[in-house]
Image (cartoon, rainbow, N blue to C red; front, side, top):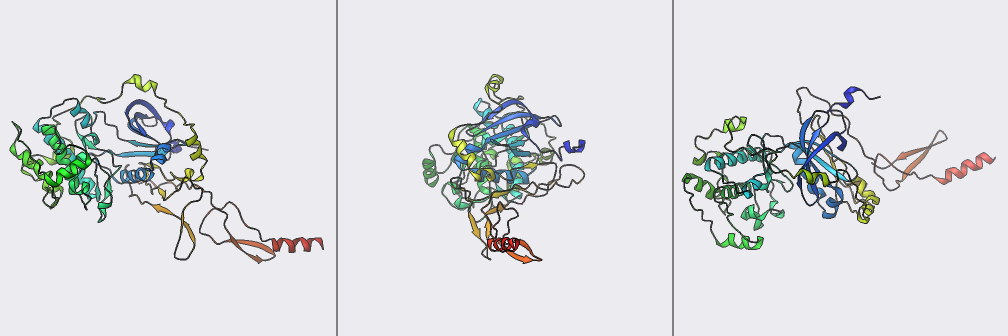
Length: 444
């Protein structure tokens, strides 16, 4: 019997039915973003709905889990914070903060001309949020005007950690990027670190100041220009000349000479362009924003929302084929997050072959088979005042191959002992020699 406490945000299992879908605010190749209301608390959130079928077709399942893992670790007033994550048969759902001011790219494309004071404020918001990201040993790698979103007070927030990466010595192996904003060392497939994000800040600052990119062209053309051509920044009338040197320092081709390479974010904050800038007021969000966007500036038209099917199941042949595959049922195991209690993190299946019903396995040092899994540890997250014990994680049973058992006779009974580390099985093997002896004894 359920009690009232079972319906609290801490104990409730989150589903799609817990939200009122108010407005479609974004649409991508394999996802939609909705403005929603959480029925239990009447809070407004942004809900990202991602198609499982398209995730598997594009082979980006690892990216989705990695982003969930990063979002669950980070919580900061200048980032897009995660509140819930759950799934159903068709989709994955990520519920985050809702910011109705639109992204920075939208306002630039609407021919908004930003002043120097506005540009300095917006760059400061990015620097402050990025400082927290770097302290958690994460390189964002995708800072661009479309991944910076305004709240109702005019403060910018960093979003989208889809291609973010933890800092390590083998970074040169991962070069996925938005090339117009990407540091030269990444495009040239060299090892990179936190200063690659500083280059992206320089690109954004130059767009706000001059409305141009440092390099234009295709990815290969930009790569060649970086090798041969130095960046020249023209002064803008009415702007402090220090702004030019700040941007030029961030756009340095050599990462060892780039602004921020020696002392990190601190070097950016202490640049002369930010002289007398109150970082403490910015941190506390008591500084009046010089630009405040209109609410719901970037939302889709309501008529478009009415044409969208809020609930729908794909019935094409490819979808049915994946559904019948046993591995599909465990491909998204552990995709769950609830901000109200400590979450131990998803267990992510690795190297799943959706064209083969057998899971890839590896042998441990003792020669026994084990499921090839990666356990991602998430930090303890404490949102409410008092500590809340997390409920026991839900264990999803998986269909495995029949497992052999050792059998010994004890007190005239057959005792079956498991010889595998697995906790569940679907079949057991019977020793028919014992059965024959029993039948012979029974006939006598």
